[in-house]
Amino acid sequence: MKKDIVVIGTGMAGFGAASRLGQAGIRPAVYDRNDYYGGHTASFREASGFLFDLGPHISFTKDPRIQDMLASNVGQEYESLQVKLDNYWRGLRLTHPVQLHLNGLPHDLIVEIIADFVKVHDAPERPVANYEEWLVASYGRRFAELFPMQYTRKYHLTAASNMSTEWLGPRMYRPSLQELLRGALAPWQPEVHYITHFRYPKQGGFHSYLAPLPRIADIHLRHEVVAIDPKARALQFANGAAVGYDALVSSIALPALLPMIAGAPADVVDAARSLACSTCVLVNVGVDRADLSEGQITYIYDEDICFTRLSFPHLLSATNAPPGCGSIQAEVYFSDKYRPLDADPGEIVGRVIADLHRCGILREGDRILHQGARVVRYANVIFDLGRAAALATVHGYLDDIGIHYCGRYGDWGYMWTDESFISGERAAEAALSATVPARS
Ligand SMILES: Cc1cc2nc3c(=O)[nH]c(=O)nc-3n(C[C@H](O)[C@H](O)[C@H](O)COP(=O)(O)OP(=O)(O)OC[C@H]3O[C@@H](n4cnc5c(N)ncnc54)[C@H](O)[C@@H]3O)c2cc1C
Image 1 (cartoon, protein in one colour):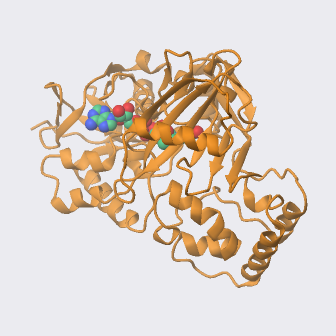
Image 2 (cartoon, protein in one colour):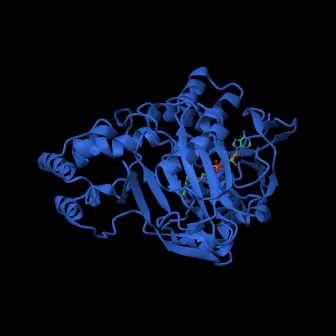
């Protein structure tokens, strides 16, 4: 007999789970609280004609299986683009990553950075206790404080000294002395970034990559799970509906998931609530001019400018904006634990537009054809020093009661779309192979 496997969430993880179940001949019921499917990978075509994703989304997976699947999902109709990133720091535009492109900074500062770098470069390797120590050991204190530690406060919303390093992977490039000096002398183009090229659908935004989901699953939108009884194996929804399941795959964020589980011990619920995450207010702006930026993404270091990153959706696909127009998506970050949201989205739109003028991205005379904001409640997992122990407690409990968690907010990691999809596949695989006793 086939097991009744229920999936919660229609994002990349839910999509991965449904795909794996489809391979086993199961068409799963998938529930989502939103009135659209896709989770973070949704895209919205506004009445103004501009299209904005729910946060800038590009596909840079190196996994050929996922590349082929995504390409096929959009009928091979995708853009293949070279990534162009830059940095804004105190009025200067610096090539990314700054540690390889010091030229353009004031000469005295370059000398200080190099002198500090040489000190740490010659020091013997030693274990580091946190991200700040890793940054200082990798770049020297002057550079670490002026660039990544400042960016950390804007993006991760806590001090680098309060963060672990387990999320780093290839994200932060450690240059050799030769590379640092080369980039300090003159512009050059080393290919060291972990993303060099990416793909993006020609039509319909990133969401198009999830086009097969309604064909392989029964999607139930506006179904917010509010209670889970793991003994009776039953789900309760905010709209009054209820369903039973043999096995459950969940991509709900852990701080929201644990309090809804009947009988979850208080220490496990507390551990889940202590997990830190950022909330992102996405401010979307459409302008009557396309020459807003050369690069697709700009990182903003200055703490008196409210946004942390800017992206330009019209540079991903020409269909993202009306002809001749350009679009900007600004990310403004908050965190319940470290910097609670301090204004309503409308006020944040005003702050962003003022700061876009201060940075020179918007000019006098630009006509704003679209402005609006969307709030992404769970954005980036914050790897603070409490995360690892709390996560082990939460995952251990979910393993004990047989709830198969997945995705960025179920695994609670720094995962890209391809990794979230694979995580969903793995959770479905585990649900398929779990022994299921009769429902109580
Ligand atoms: C700002 C930003 C930019 C990013 N850029 C990129 C990028 O360029 N490239 C890339 O590969 N990745 C990017 N990512 C990462 C990517 O978004 C994630 O890896 C991926 O989308 C996570 O998918 P998911 O299914 O795990 O989570 P989600 O997409 O959040 O899906 C979870 C789903 O569960 C639903 N849900 C939650 N609670 C309930 C409930 N109680 N009842 C019912 N349904 C519920 C939600 O509505 C949602 O649909 C970015 C992330 C952010 C925040």
